[in-house]
Length: 335
Image (tube, rainbow, N blue to C red; front, side, top):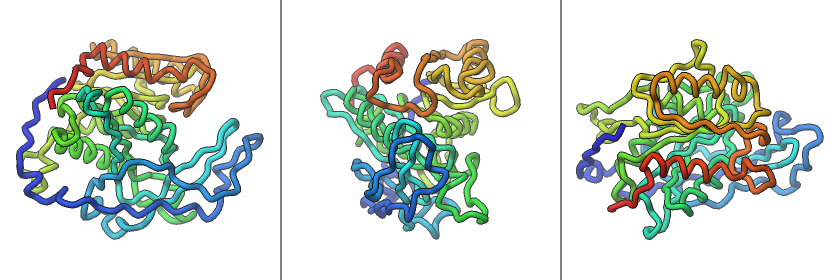
């Protein structure tokens, strides 16, 4: 599924990236939401939640995302989420979608790039272990990573009783497509081969990945925005513990499905680790002759992401990197 992308000077001439934009800092949640607590979990810190330090964000739409222009300067919210064995920061109230680049050192760069979509039930984003932590790991291993903050269809920042302004199919997918195009448009600047740009989504982020694939958007040569002329389809895709009931009507792999990496733990939900979940997706892709690799760990549960712990699932990023290497995607960049 390798394709050649000719990216002309019109993108720079358009002024889209002439100047960096300042993204408002995320503000602490006024209180811990009841949905973010779990009986028996570790105590929630008394200190206000703070977003982990990260490289400067790149705004996907300088004038505001379609339909969200009036809210583009609204700050994101950072909160605490408590689960049975861990407390971690989350991000929500996302109205100005961005990507956060984690770029490898030039002497390590392979030219391969991955856009990372954290999960969180479309209510929030597990921004560290499904985002920044993976971005750092990939960059340390020569792979450029771009953590995507996409609009949330069930955003915790929307007041109760107020209609949610976004949907996965329309808004989160538009953000994913735009992220693919922004990375390809700046491939030379970031040391990326535009024919080796993939997308990995965790949990709800996997739904975004699925919609991105089925959108089948090769770009419109007549689009007034030069970015919309670029292909938004990924060259490879990863699904981290995403519920995809491919035997039903929810989602079916398209004819041009890219090579796929599947990952989950056996103790996860039935629609993820059971016969109707990633196992069914693996079988469907095999039947369609799509290159695919599946890993099911015995331990890990849901939402393990990148964690330093005793379970063997902690080593899954090495398997992902090995798969990229087996696919020939880690050859040294000539940029």
